Image 1 (cartoon, rainbow, N blue to C red):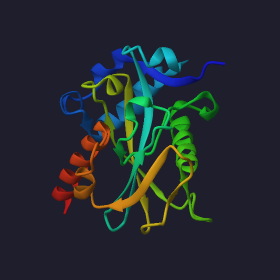
Image 2 (tube, one colour):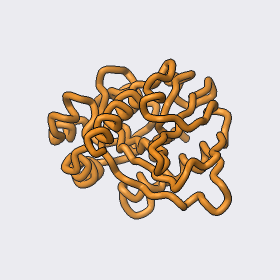
Image 3 (tube, helix red, strand yellow):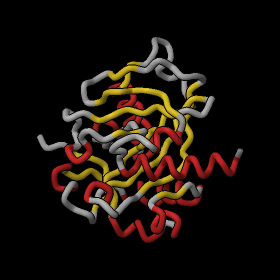
Image 4 (cartoon, rainbow, N blue to C red):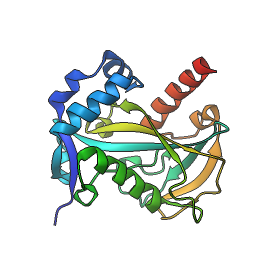
Length: 211
């Protein structure tokens, strides 16, 4: 059976602020609410292989950035066994993936949360007793139409705050080189994927303003 994933129509993109459309990322609460209320309200499940080639469909990706209270960010590198061939060997700060039909319980937003929790538990080994011991913050939305990958995906940026720097290990061979880094150091990683660059630049800017 062909895998089906959560998507929404391209026409909904016109409702986002110029921040997102011009800068490829927005931390605006209005844009987050618009995504939740308008984009997810018109979302549906489409065959993944077809959606990957159709820019009129935006595939919903929760993009979880794991952070410690001390301000560091968890980084890793995608291996050649990861599902998205266009991202092989790239460094990343985002854990996440497509939302599939098994994630759908009550509504699309609940499915996004369930899908993110599934990805976290699939890709990382969490310390016993701590798998639910984190705080989620819906920080922004991501859309990068400058690349073939970005053009067909839409990200919900979720910062996942941990009480300290847990010793997290890969749970599957699709990721390697898991380590904690400062946002500035992470931005200097070799072959960093586009979404990670965009997110890190915005986080650094925001954290500097808030400091």
